[in-house]
Amino acid sequence: MAFHPDWLIPDWPAPARVRSVFTTRAGGISKAPYDSLNLGRPSADAPSDVDVNRARLQVALGHAPVFMQQVHGVHSAELRTSPERDAMPSIQADACVTVQSAVVCAVRVADCLPVLFTDSQGAGVAAAHAGWRGLSAGVLENNFRHFEALCMRTVGPSRGTTASGFASRTLAWLGPCIGPQAFEVGSDVREVFVAQDASATRFFQAKAGDKWLADLPGLARARLRAIGVSRIYGNDGSSAWCTVANPLRFFSHRRDSVRLGGSGRMAACIWID
Image (spheres, rainbow, N blue to C red):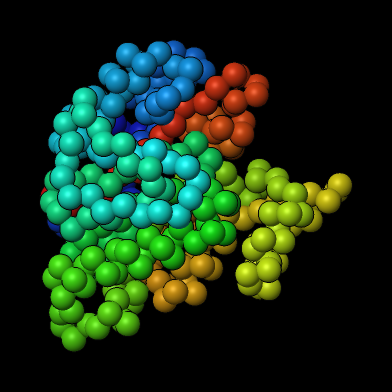
């Protein structure tokens, strides 16, 4: 198993049997503006180039990642088998979970927030795609509840852990996304979050013209803590994690789609060896 040196390996205390990685732009064959490891399909990129990029990722992982049809919703799908690369299932979901080994949960992003889950014993893994719509609608909560239920049903409580205490042994990793210095939204977006939790105001900074800068990773961390998940790692909202601020390393839909005519997609992947 050999990852491109530019890819991100989550720095978190996951069990040794749990593997995870976040791809960057590096390591593929796509031409500008999709250069180089664009994993997004459909897109205006050459389909044959995307196929080669996905094949390279599969070789690096040692397993075929399951790419879902993401629709900015909240549905969480259970993955039971690892598909052949040329026979990907048509799963419409924005989150997934598995307790099976060698099954790669994957989400594609280009500004939205990828969130990976596992537990301290490595009983299962999960992945969620969280843009502001999915986040406000509860994609993280839904994915966590699905992950909790599957782990508890499959392996049962261990070492005295009950379902109600499962969150305390859950680990979450937040990957790169559009940062709080770049994510400009209207008042309508702010109102959605504030209506659910008045304290969410702290994640919005006022700008001129009824616009706001939103802290997407900050909002996600708050929602995870609200359901009892406190062991949270990765994206802290600093510029190094911002997809918009790092054009040489990350794709960004907001930065590139209008200016360059398109943007590629990266992937956050997690699986049990």
